[in-house]
View 1 (cartoon, rainbow, N blue to C red):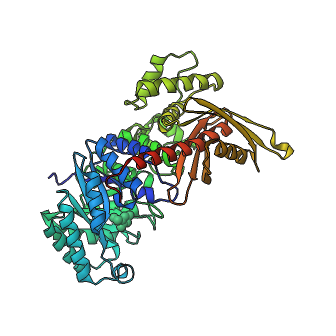
View 2 (cartoon, helix red, strand yellow):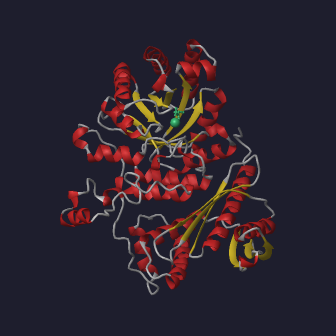
View 3 (cartoon, protein in one colour):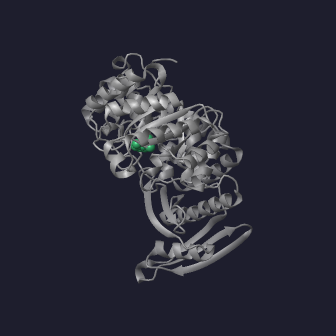
Length: 517
Ligand code: KIV
Ligand code: ZN
């Protein structure tokens, strides 16, 4: 094993998905997983297979398509969880089971109501059982940040003897300071020696997640658990882009440590996750925020023009940010130039069908919008991919003047080979649109969240709408995406996208009879 390599374990699809409003459907998770593979992530935690049939389905489908990263499922230290995790990852060329139990006094006393001996026994049984499915087993001492070191050593000895190959020390509640966590990691990684890889998983409750991750690698951790855009429970997890770029940019301070992350894929990955979840990183977010590489003050602009390094410690291109994003394509540009452009933007696996459909949308847009930017094209292509399932396809929308107090929407939809139409009034224009779509599809959606963003500046900017809709108490929320120069069209598309996503999940799960949890 190379002692200087830091293994990157991405948990965007598990801990990240636990962030409020960040749930993704299976198709979306597959897209993110393939992008994480392209990014060079070593291990992808694809979900918590035993949580629901939908989660099992997502983990197992990711296991079938990802070839280069190891696919991992989380499981509590419970037999059925471990079995579901083992079955879900079995088809991946490289796979891992990640099992955990809490080791802090507060968790053992109040949550688990278990003695130290019982915790150790349960941990050992879990690792031994996981080993019957896979060779690569990770064990987490949940709430390690508040656990006692002598007890953690006992647990580590026991689970390593049972076959655990990676020991994860999560700061579950984001409580530790970098100096404290660094000292704990040093003691425990010296204790583990060559017997296991020490991993860290830091939450950001005090804004210290990345600092804690970096303090840990300096002190012997060789796996970091991170998420794209820092998504995760509560205040989130340590952000992949921050930890990776700190190690790369400050190589001098990290004495030869490195990751295998293909850093120019960082920004495209961040954009994909933000587009799918509808959760944008804050503008001033390190590395991937909108302002991360923009200089407002004249003094800074002047400095950067004279010599880039006066005010920039990283090259934007190194994380996949290309400053000049104005596309020199217009309404007379042909398909070949368009194909070149999307390749240049990193979309190298676009099918001919997707390319043709996006090119048609590009032509329509070019007729209406003066300057088309890289962001517009990126968004058009992502939107086509996210809306590939078109059980219901929006063909037309007409809305009445709402100033007379009676907003009305008339909607035309293609369903299979039929064209269906209806109209309804509502409390507002959006309400009228949703009610009409509900009547046309026969599904009563509850809008849980709605976001509209403009893709670029200018009055003619594309509107990108994300709608989060629930259709029944038992199933999760479904996300729909809509893109149009007209906000109401984008709204109708997003709502209909959520219906399509709900239907395809329902259909797939009803076909699956094996491995139900
Ligand atoms: O924060 C945490 O402790 C976790 C574990 C399940 C690894 O997410
Ligand atoms: Zn966590």
